[in-house]
Image (cartoon, rainbow, N blue to C red; front, side, top):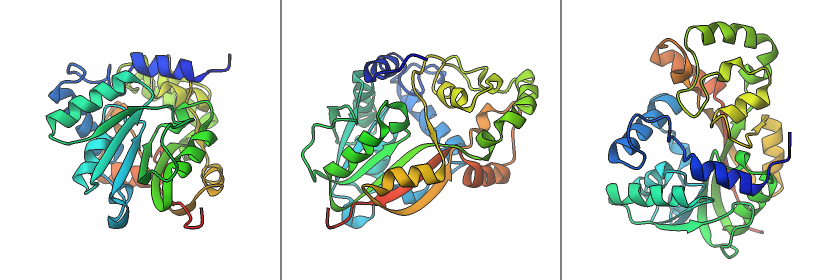
Length: 279
C-alpha cells in the first residue's frame, strides 16, 4: 500500500467527520449530537463514562482536547470541572462541529486548527491534554506523543487512547470464520462503508475499516507497545480498556455481558499519564 501522508488523513476526516454517515440525523444538529453522546455512553462505554478519563482538581485549570472531532470530549471536560478548554483538530469541519456543539450546550471554549504531529502551542501551555482515539490515525504517532508531553506543564496529566490489539484481534486468524457467520446474519458497522468489516482477513484492515472504508490510516497497539511509546515522555499511572462495539452485532447482548466485554476485551487502550516534574 502506498505510504499515507498527513494530507491524506486531513482529506478523509474533512470529508468524513466522526459519526457522520452513522447518525440518522443531519450532521451538526442537536439530535445528531444527542445521538452521538448516547452511542458513546451506552455502546462505547457500556453505559457509563469512566471517571478516570478526566483530570483531577489540580490539573483542571487549562486543558487541550486534541483531535476534538465533533466535540464530545470537549463538552464532557467542561462538565467535569475543567475551567478553560481549547479544542483542537486537524480539520476545519471538526472545529465547526465542536463550536456548534458548544453553543447548543452552553459551553464556552476556544478552538484551534492543529496538526498533532507539530503543535503550534508553546511549551508547558496546558495542565491536561485529552487525546482520545486520535494519534493512531496519523503517520507519525510517536511525534504526537512527544508533542503532547511538550505542551504539558511539569506535573501535568494526559489521557491518551489508541486502538488495542485485544484478544479478538490477536485471535482473528481463527475467529474470522465465526465472524463470517455473524456477517451473514447482519453483523457489521452502520454507514461509512463499514458494513463488511467482519469479512476482513487482516487485523490491520479491521482497524482501518472501523472509521470508514476510505480511512487511510488505522493502527492498533499491544499493551507493551503502547506503554513503551509513552514511557519516553511520561509516567503512566493507569492503564484500562473500553470500547466493545456491541452495536455491530446482529443481536442484543445483556448489559452485564456488555460491561464485562467492555472492561476486559475493549478495542481501545487508555493510559492515564503524568509528565515528570523534572521535565
